[in-house]
Length: 443
Ligand SMILES: *Cc1c(COP(=O)(O)O)cnc(C)c1O
Image (cartoon, rainbow, N blue to C red; front, side, top):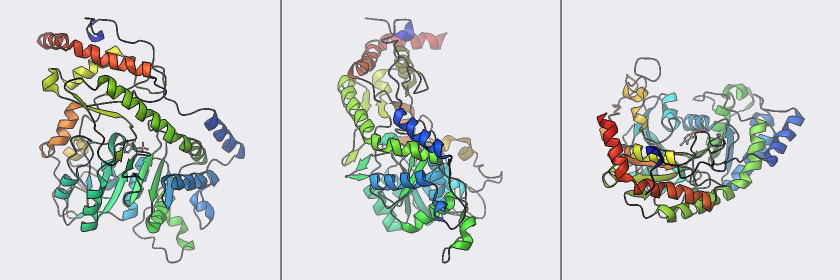
């Protein structure tokens, strides 16, 4: 039996994995063409077609809307801005509650806070880590105004029960699709299933424009409010008769022409990039599917995942080693770095190992100013509750989840073989790993 790298043996592989880099000649050309016009952003704050941005932004929005089969696409400078704008567009404010998932990137939950509303966490589905509709239902009160769902790791949230709840209780639903471009739910693109969908184009996502995001909606009024929030709402007040400009704070969430041009170049390539991830996942799951104590996120009925990351759960009882030690051992076998486009860049890690409610902002209930707003005070009649023991499945997932992105193209079958070999090698050495951990503990 060969010694594992963590215990001083030779790693399975030292040669860097091929880098995932979506930026190529096409994108360089697209950027050059914009540079040559000298117009890098064209929004103006007046009643004029340029209120909607320059030609690249408007073309990008039209192409995005067509690709996702949705009426309106509004390009913004990040998904975080998009989530803030979505909450602003729906008119949520102080005294309101918004149900949010605990396993996500922080912005999914902070968007309501920015508008003075209180995020109420729900528990997650044990398989997909997405917000669980049964738990969402339990969290609805007379103060609930909206639900933010996240399609985590690219797997769709079970939207039918969420929408049924929203219809029954008259709630807005916002889909955080930052990780789920072209994921689908019973044949429909996620993002178009509820009131507003928000996509991310940051560097780490399937396709990226450096920074960027897109909001989509089929609701004309919400689209108008999103555009106003994106571009200093107040500046067009004079030119738009019949438009209510109260309850609208204008920001600068504008996407520029260069980002839009990169987005236009990459959007038609996204499906193929995602198909390659799916194919690689199938190969890898075949190779490591029989390991005891390790399970994969099973794709739920009606769902197609975009595999932003591959989710694994480890049963630490069966393994006899902790999730973190298993990750440490796997990392030692493979050329892993944190930066994806650097040589060797490939990620494996503990996923969402800290539920969002553990952030100091929630634990201390200090977010805006120091008086406890919006969690405490005269505006809010509810009682914010961020005790960790309320969410057993989120806590369990945070303790046992592993995520990796080693299925990204251009990873080949032989690259994936090395990944699988690393898993098998560590598995064959679990006893040695356990002894080593015990010795380390007693040092
Ligand atoms: C990346 C991400 C965001 C934020 O995206 P930005 O474009 O970086 O603001 C929000 N939610 C989720 C789930 C994400 O993965």
